[in-house]
Length: 478
Image 1: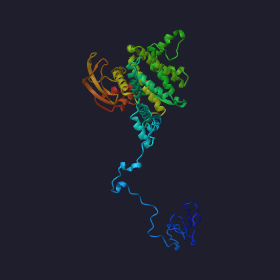
Image 2: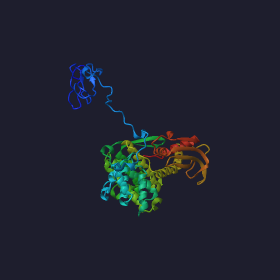
Image 3: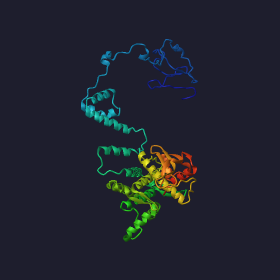
Image 4: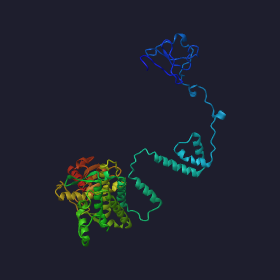
């Protein structure tokens, strides 16, 4: 705009439009008939800029038979009612198939897998793949690789992927020294946690983590860091290392000549005592350097139980105030590794999936088998009063039972004897039924959620249900 009511258009050649003697500007377009020029049409703008001006007197106005400046859309041949032409009648207009040598076609396989070839090249490549087996195999591999490049799902690996890959490999080449089935969950969970720690920087290693567990029917917490959690796993896994005759990760608390006494002292301290001892004797706070010893110890445990040929499952591991068979202790440490890996993932705001269903089922089964003894300890410590209608039975005899139904991929059903660890769960003596989600039950057993909020459904003896829920939470420890 060069002034009020002035519009100065440019013509199609980039020049400025002419101005007529009456002060009206026009745009020199093809088809406009100026004085003595060729016929056509033009757009006129008056001084007000509203586009309502009339053509200059000397033009005589636009001719009524002049075609519109913008053509109407072309009708499709399908809408014309006429038959479509036969491709055989096109003659020379039909596309000519490409006749390419083998080397050129082979070089096009990558572009074909990426759908980057022209229609003619695609037709030539696909015709060649029907005749050349080598190129067909290569094309299949390239197409599968392209599928991995365009992964629409989350980048987080399925926890069962590692198991499936190993099973596929072992089917083709069985291992000379296989990992026992009861140690597979520990092997898988330590590998998953190690993968999570792989790319941690200093900020992640010192991220605050709050350990949670239940003790005496009260929630307990302990503040540490990601490195402190790995130190905790290292020190408690050392209980299994001691049972297998491996090196204790805790430094000896006695002179060298009393090394055996120091190891016995560490073993009797239990998980909490060993962890506190490790934190006191190590650099505080622990750093990323703790990952190496933990990783090496987990590998040593798996190697050692594998070399035993599965015969070491009869050994027992002392936790200070109780003992577990070696195969149950390995499951217990796999469960702890998963739960603490979730603690770490929450601290760095990273998603973490539950274990593979078959491993999750074994962890739940271990907790269910430990519940009768946990119920007995609650009664001995006064946390649970003797139940009304308690049924005293001999060892191995059926007694009052609670049906524990765990839903989900790792779930199942267990009958929990309520009155004696030596009794046998019986459907005939069932007095209560509790249903929980598989992951929720594990969160309860780890002390991560309150017992009052854990049950998804409950029917029957309310006192028995409460005792079982609180006994499940009491299985947790730091």
